[in-house]
Length: 67
Image (cartoon, rainbow, N blue to C red):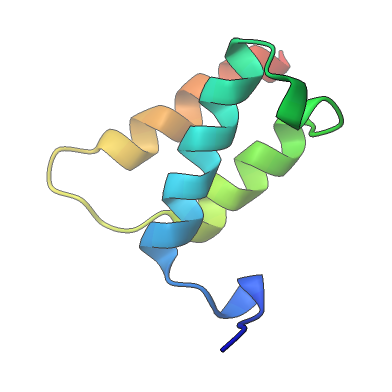
């Protein structure tokens, strides 16, 4: 059963952003055409309330690479 990515859970979207960012940092051949803006968009769509603030910190980290 196929699902549209927009229907994915917030956790899945956030995890995708983290994985994509890690692959981008290591210059993976699999993310050659993926922008940091896309990663930020995924992270923000997947951002959920977490007690320790890890997701917000990740978003700040990605934003800092855009400046």
